[in-house]
Image 1: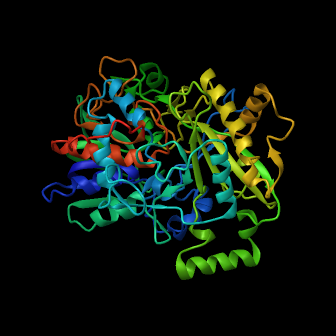
Image 2: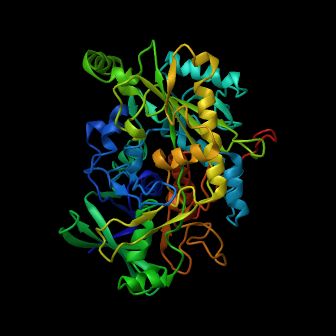
Image 3: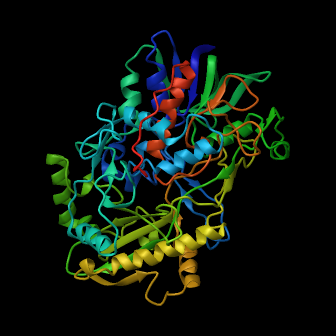
Length: 548
């Protein structure tokens, strides 16, 4: 039986950073178990390949969420990465940290060391920012390259001018002093290729003799001796594969992600006693595992376009061949793009404490709002969502079969505030698309359509066509032991157990105003110092004017 100092379950965004940091000590051995294959597929590294990887089951868990009352009874597709790099290998490469208040709220919930001033040094340590940004907020020497979208499209420029005409300022760096405003998106792309957790952190670490990466290793159970985690059982090759055990001399670290981490804990006897007993699993420790799931839910407002080409037309025929040639020769053009080009952060109403809406603009449109299936007619899209949703759902095992997908119930729009903000977002999206700078290109609104005008009508449209933005978190929440909702403490150790930590987006106690990849890596980077017993990085000195 193989032994390592640390066994990390999951080579996703968090697992890759952890492997890199922990293996810096040559006297420490690290084993990483990844259920999927290596990240060899060309579509992973081609930026526009996300259209394919979103649906490739060989590198994607391809989950389905449970239908909900506010999603029109629909089961929404929920892709998650199943390869080296995890979801950072299949996502839309967006780099977005969130707002200062997000992390200060974490600290106020009883999590020492997780306020904005505490986590900012880790954001800076991770990144290699290329482009605008004050050094107070941005890093220049890290491994994760962050660039600004360099596609300059007339529709994008007109959209940003339209935002300015409505009083929304341009913001050169939404990851800097303040998030509010409109700008081209920042993304983890370098020289026309994706930068993932794997390419930035794991692959360099794999050159070290103390790093051992095992792909096609589907974890089925965490092994315990009493209350201490001592190893992991996995199936080499997935269902029907060879059962294997590895032991951890120091710690087992669970970095399976928001859906898979609670599932494995429950399969290992950690969770709700009622749920575990229902599926014939002996209760090892009672904790609210899987409860508190949050995600961003976005309806997309679509307008038809006139007198200019959109991405819809460029992705076929001779135009596509020309774009392919641009990418092959200069790593530019259509194939170097992300799912969205422009980001806008603003308020749903005067009562919003800070920007509670995120809107994205794309000079393209998708069939029935489903990302990855472009329409034939020219179109442009504004997706809008509530940045800090109140609604919470859950992730629960479906059975005691470790290969069965978990039950994922998001409860989108369950909270009245979320419904109110989502309606405000759709109204703002309409105003932006109908703004004067876009008028030369605006033909008509295709969805929700000109007959939708009341709050109830907008809400109905949102339930019909809204979808996930692929930002699930908060299923193994970080908080004090005496809370009713926490699974891990502020060192990410599972309450009541030894030798076991959860380190991924599932530990977020509350959803942040952002995509989750950047913050997931930050969590792992800070956790690596906690694991090694290193003094945390000195808290940042932030100007009082900063509201990011």
